[in-house]
Image (cartoon, rainbow, N blue to C red; front, side, top):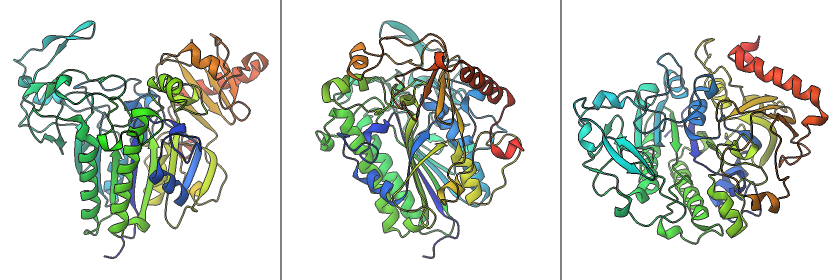
Length: 493
């Protein structure tokens, strides 16, 4: 088969993965990640890569639109929540479709659907006990599962979708394209599943297909991914595949064959299983003859969950190494994530790049690759073209970035400096023992905090009091970026 003129694109997106979990980022990591380590050897490993948010939905939205999530919303899509995409918003897969690409999303979606379109209005929700609270939830009888579910992946640029939308949210069933594969006929019951291996199930109640097994998530989506890659080799059109993992997000459920494969407990084993899946997909890419014409990108939506504190205490493995903060936090550990790019014929193998980059930049970068002129409105307002950086033509493309998880708390990056606003840079629960173990002050300032990351990557030394004018200038710059509605270089002219 002759290689397509335009490169295929394969994006791997992990969920709640720490910067310090991969061996290629931290040599003392207790988790074996041979496939991702090899990918880093074959491409560019960015050491200053970021997601837009410290939680799931916003980061995914930002990656697939090239737009900071906080310009539209802050939180996640809850169970049976609506789509976060406005009809006029150009998405990355829509852009690729326009350039003749076959597009697919496999795995976690978490960006919403129009579930009301298949809900039976006459069926009312039932009151159920969820922990200490009583909540109203729909049973399987509340939906017409024979209907197509609108406003999902297929409505926003993907030709094909397969997954369970969100592993710990209902409905607990497989969805292919815009229909459930098998209709839910019962309600979620964790007692019917195998034992959780670390932490809690974190699963919200709702409709489930009988016999549903969350342990099958990675094996089944991996099989679908391999099938898609092999089938793509037999066509003339290039493909864009967005493969989003549910791991190592809770529930932490590595399959038995991966038990004990890491030195960081079940979480480490789950990361190892994720790496193994990536290895299978990369092997399919190579065996199908497409590896040398495929851009491969790997990153994660945010930092690790709060279980990381207990893991550090028990296994002496800090998933967010060398950073402070975890998922939800605006400290670096919440959004400073692994970011690896392999572009055969463009990137130099084994390159380590310290430039500031963001997942938001993927859209403008791919627009440059496929020669797509991004429109001035409703498209990639914050995305920077990284192609000159990947080619080694420049040392940096962006000098600033805005990190945010919740309204009222921000981290604004400008060069080596980062300003942290709000009452606290932490949102996830923090153990005092961790602060003492890692040499942090007992308390943080309640005012704006300023750190120089070049000198203090762990954000231990707040120097705001010493640089009052710097704080004032960065607060003004943050305000400007938020209010002007864009930050992309093409829109700054």
